Image (tube, rainbow, N blue to C red; front, side):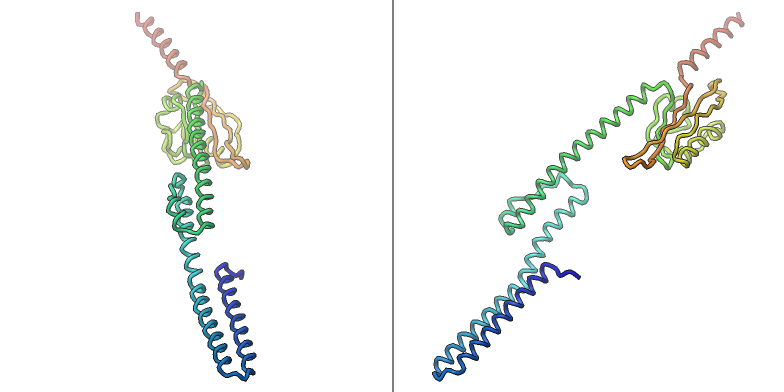
Amino acid sequence: MKQTFTGKIRLIILLVFLITLIQGLVVLNLVGGIQNDDLVKNVQNIVLIAIFLQFLLLVVLFFYIPVFMRKSFSEIHNVLNEIAKGRYNLEIDMEYFKKHTDKEIYSIFLSIQKMLQAVYRFDKLKKAKIVEHHNRINALLKLAQEGIMILDLKGNIVYMNELCAQVFPSIVEKSNLVDSNLPPVLEKNLKKYVITVLDKKSKQDPVQFFIADLKRHVTLDSAIVRDDEGKATGAVISVRNIQIEKKQKKQKDEDKVSEKSSE
């Protein structure tokens, strides 16, 4: 297992103390052969005091450095934890860290702040682009001369244009088409077709079926929505020949014929 940074620091401290202890023992051994007892005692006292003071200093460093590192990195961890929650507009008190943290730790916070500013700008641009594409899709759906439904692979209707909603009031946007209870003609044809497309994750050949309320045949067609890796994420279903104008025009013509016959 790779040794941690704190473990390496503690190992260095222990090595420094070991070297100091060896040096002290060597000096004490060398002065032991001197005939001047007062000189020997003075040297021994100085060496022992020096070793003791270095021991105290190293003990303090042994425990202080890990505590200092833990405190400094815990503050970094707290900031990164907030960023991980999606808080890209997080305000970091740089003045506080500049005054109360080490220069190297402050430089880390400075880099994090710059990163946050870049991510926030990117996130803002991404949201703006998403809204722009959303509006484009809605505009295209409104202009479409056929019914359009965009679904995910679970059958949830992500988008549906007004034409489709008006002709098929039993189908509701944001609902799940697969789980919905539809009129028999839609259950047998539309839902069956959609389930096939979603299960096979591929475009299916167009199919036609007759809707008595519209008094005409409609055509179902499909396309697959894929992500950047080419994996299917949903489908687009089109229902052709359901234009309300045609239905209304036909109804008016029938009304005129009935009025003339009554006269």
